[in-house]
Length: 464
Image (cartoon, rainbow, N blue to C red):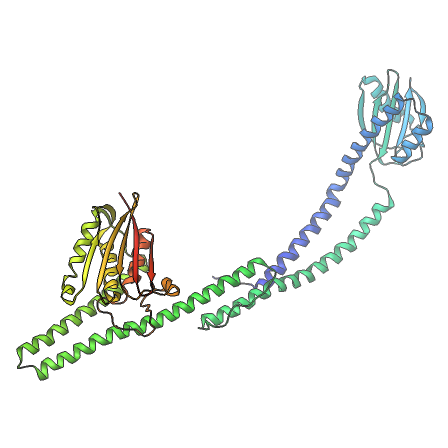
């Protein structure tokens, strides 16, 4: 069963409020469970430090009033005993003080224990029999016969502590309420641009590729998401335009041969049924146009396989120079129309690649050169050796390509002129197929072109 989803605003509000609640809970747990333990730890640490200071006072022969000030500033009781006789005692009415009264026998037990232990320092924890409160005592040996006993209360009785605890209750309630309010507004602030983006994305899904994503926030991730979606929108716009052009161009390339096939078939049937030569001429046109249709369908299928990564590479070692010579020979039928093909290569080069696909690359580039070469009808293939790799050029002498159009020529059916025209040979998908095959081989490729001087298509092949 699918779990019911909640809005981003509600999620943010809930987690922010939960975070504040956990902080307050931790604060109260610390106050209730760990405060006394921490207080004892800090008191013990301060008491040890006070004992060291008392010994320094004794060694420096400080006056009684100095001990009084030390006792007062640290809210502690200091008693100095020599031969079981008290030689100094600070104000014994403080809450932390243990003094000799009718419970003196019990009080003297820890003193007698320490004096007889021969230790230099020891800490005792006991209940003050007079005031019935927990008291911490630090006993320290000053010399062979003199000892100091410093004691403080372990129960925080300062009124400020009680006030702080009372205030903490009100502060907790106030923070708890305010946290829910602020969490709500913060969640609305963060989720608002995302909701706007979501609304705009739904419009884009319905076909609106014109309206841009405009969300200006001080949140880096939101701005990056906006930029990404605007980039996606622009790419989808290009894709949509390409799709329309492709549909129009494919329709054109399908319609032309179909129209010719129909026309020549009717001529062969109705007008030239008795004229063998004319009938054969008509049938040859029908065959040529049928082959053109077949080539178009094959190129569309090839391009589709390449773009969907359904076609894998079958690499092998072979001589690229010999392969180019073989492909050029296929164009011999164009020599009767004045076309010349030249191969400029100083050596044979063994490469490792998918022979069938690389054959298709060279064939398509030669078709492109035939379609766009100049009045001299020259097409040249040149191989340059760069030791670690070779560069294969396919060159024509045509009118060239404008600089702003160079990156677009690899698109399906892209034309320098917007009006699509029927090519002499090929289907108009050749360069798109070339691009996909070279990318699969991870080959560097590109175009060099000068207006009215011609164009050079090239690609680089690593040597075996």
